[in-house]
Length: 416
Image (cartoon, rainbow, N blue to C red; front, side):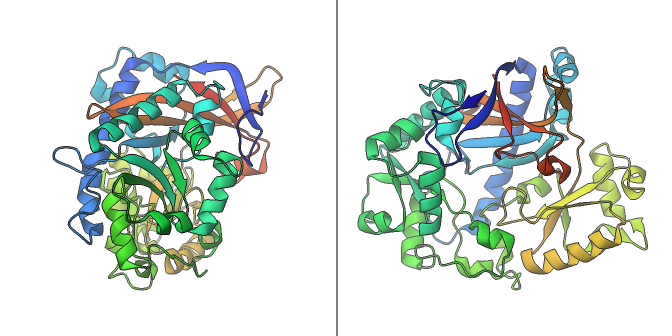
């Protein structure tokens, strides 16, 4: 059925209202341990981005930097796996789940949609957990939490897609859980305020995602003075100096943290690619790439022979499917395209393409699906706050291009 009560330029949304997926406790515990591993890796990445001692001071537990809420995008869990997991050890479940993960996202978006898709009051599993996590941060810091878009383009796009147009401060809180929503103009008027911290949305715009040669104005982050204020009060790890985005100067590259996937490499879930020769030499997989495949229980011969495709994606600055390539590893066209994209976007990571599970609805239409799962830190521990099964009809162009994501064709089901 179509859901029309969500205030968004992307509305209406399609939902499978009566199809509810219930995760076993072992799966929830194992995913929580993966979130902890992710945050401990992020604690190693954050210092590379630091410019001033007070950076990210409100995004710390007692002894390390952490993302207070994350989204895990992974291969959809089939009923057979969930039945097996009930009697398996946590370690067995965790190792199996690690190999199903595509990405872990620390810049969550579409709060109203996530909270209200299956409950117009917003008191869904996600809605309650999300607000509880935000309230815990308010209590600990004694500050209001402002959603901050650092460019006007991002502000206007979010205003339309996440709030359905102009909204008052009371409605911002009701729809998102944040105390306010600012763009550059309102930030400049309030930059001296000491009673706020920021949940920052700083991704490069779609125009840049399509072509990184596009010039993007950064009125806030280009100023060292303003960037220092934002970075000191940000509870999201995504604040860079825009001069670092010159991807021809790799001296800057380790500092970039915005939309980073470096954690995948450090967790052993992605293979770093600086050139095609990192993957293949003389039509043979390199020793390092083979070792990566074997650690992830993948037969190198299936990759070399093209039975399994690989997916490569930019290591930093890109989100969604922008810049992704999906090919057989020995394909000549892949080698040429990868070389071009590396010159435009900097280093990549490689993962073996997962075959997503499928199901049919009552009318016989077939869908492939992924699971999007959310965790938030409550009392300094990662807690499952629900998720969504993202189903894509296999007769759509998006699926044929290897993309299962939230577009007009997507159908959403609830995971509890």
